Length: 85
Image 1 (cartoon, rainbow, N blue to C red):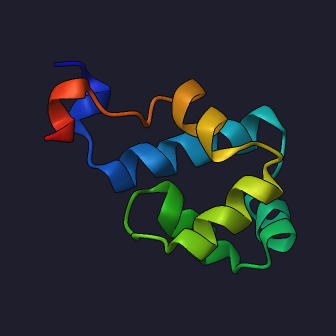
Image 2 (image 1 turned 180 degrees about the horizontal axis):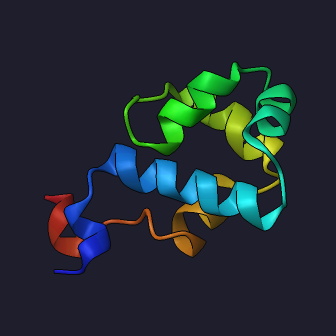
Image 3 (image 1 turned 45 degrees about the vertical axis):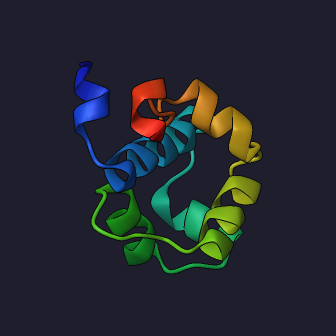
């Protein structure tokens, strides 16, 4: 099992958000403004401490100019087939 799959889904999602944000050279403040969220909320999501709602996730992917599919596929959030039972 890879290290990435030992992380919780919240941690993998947060890690993916951080990677994409850094790829776009955005600060947490800039992402928060784009997504209409608070900077500390972004920080907590990136650390995997919060379980964001689908609405919040949608705000984030729109602010990061990426689809859910690409975020999950390209940034290691996807689950192993055995995890889908």
